Length: 457
Image (tube, rainbow, N blue to C red; front, side, top):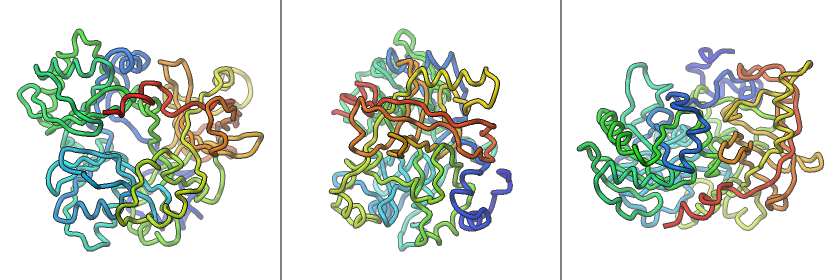
């Protein structure tokens, strides 16, 4: 099976052809999410260090999908399918928008920008974009939808609609003030400001992908080069370092955002959605989790740290299901610190005779879009590890996981099972053997600043 063979085939038809959702995704030729920018500008270790010690400039213009939603019913469409509260949500603000299926399981999330009256931009992985597009088409909504694919999927030769540059790190405010020639206004987390850079109006979201102080700056694509040049000049003397795709791919590990849990779209009551959705919109499944029941891969918002976002102040798809489980025990989002001796032993197996462990890519160990590894305690599965990578700032391999609540206390010892039991047909998978890697539970976010400070205000 090739990527080309997946084109123009409905997801439901592909599932039936493959003999099940897990079988289809585990052998999918679709590679992990790509960041179509330079891999490194200096080296990824220095670039990781920049968001702790100075300021990293990350180019977000190319790897995310934008869904522009406008019209009289835009707000209602978003409310009907978002778990978030929309009270006091007004232009100039943003939120981490989360959608669930009717049973309360997670479908997807993205950053929702409230640009102007009746005008929104949903930015991120396309899982939640697809869901809203389907619901807009199937429901009675007076909305206009315009989709700008990421640069990997966009029609060749066409540029993005907007540029996005992230300034991240202790000196981010200094860089922005040098670029604007003005003090940066006081602004709360996930609120927007307008500034002028290189004579251009630039919108800035107070944000932080790596859990450090920062702003996401955006504007019309044709103005991006002038703005970028001004930022680079302003960054001289303030420790500004451009960060490439390798470093950027690990930023979420420090802020503890899990980028792509399995979307819960495989129940019988969503068959019509799967018949509408093109299979190429899905990704591949990798990791040691080997259940044939796709529901075993699902998570609820509570399981991945989004319980704080759920607001039962409006009707939305999945509300009743989430209300029914609100007071029950849930898995907890944690950081797992992998045992360094076990990691180096797994890497060392590449240099010894016999079948080695699954290759651990540096700095991001992801080899599928839905990277889901088993977390074990005394041989029993107690959770799912869903994203792993190396943090040069800590000299550690860590992963983000969802664990049974009773094992979520920092210091708890568990095991991550790395590699696939039966090697799949994914092009990213070589012949390998599974290995057990000891891990210690830690807080999420792992970095103390991200955990205690950067969302305040």
